[in-house]
Length: 354
Ligand code: SF4
View 1 (tube, helix red, strand yellow):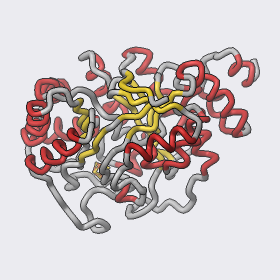
View 2 (cartoon, helix red, strand yellow):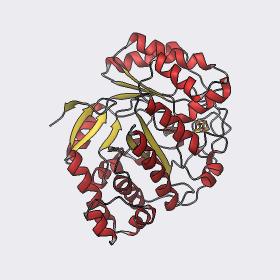
View 3 (spheres, rainbow, N blue to C red):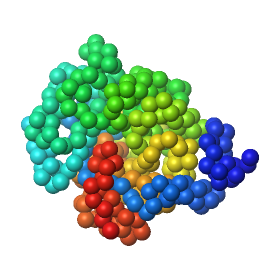
View 4 (cartoon, protein in one colour):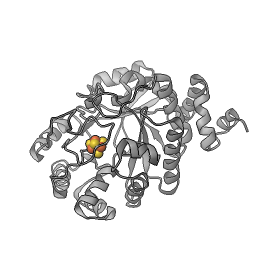
């Protein structure tokens, strides 16, 4: 079968076929990705009213692509108090947030309890808020730092009120590239193992991929296929989120940046390769809102959310520091000819904005 026959018959794509998708014309590729997107979701575009909180930027690790952690390029270390975090949560809750998304650097000074108490305090004050917290990289760090097994860290997360796991820390799974861009961070196999353990608890998570730095197209396909293999076993991934590498304030000396064509192709290929992960998210904080809106025509069905405040991508040059107002967000989705659907963290529909 040639590639278009395989796409027309919705056959599962192997590594070679998936890689060849990059050679296709952008609009032909987009046609096939959009076909699947429309079969599943029509013109609905999901979003979440959420708040990102990054409690500390002090980090024991030294990922070369990172502009968020306190280092000599960003010498502003901070650690929020629990009271500061709760104040932010209160404000966001009053503004209608349904999810608090908590991701930190790997601070070696706070203690494990400091993290757990954040979750407990939020859940005690706002039991109906969904707490999405601790990437697999953070779980790996906490496990190594405080001598707990992954299972024990996960047990505590559930006990203290974490509802789902974000997809961060996956970066790129290829071991050689990973060793160069984030040596010392959770290994690829352990990242997958931690998500698998989380899924075994009956919990859901997301998966990311950082692309557009030194990796090659083949590494992206390899990354997607490793996720697809795990998803076949657990079914625990809600969404795949390709994160576009941000170029400023970091130590990765990337000279050539991706153009929008390759970014859109990567969204489309994600949709076609990851036949078992329901949602493809164009996280506008990394792609820009304009490209995220276009990505809706290339397989993406989710634009993340209003975010409110964001420190990780904006430190590296993204225009996401203050999130986006709900009205603006809705208007943008509508004028791009899609129907905004507010969802909860598990993709139950809350409101359809026709
Ligand atoms: S990406 Fe995360 S783990 Fe790596 S240096 Fe930045 S904050 Fe630390």
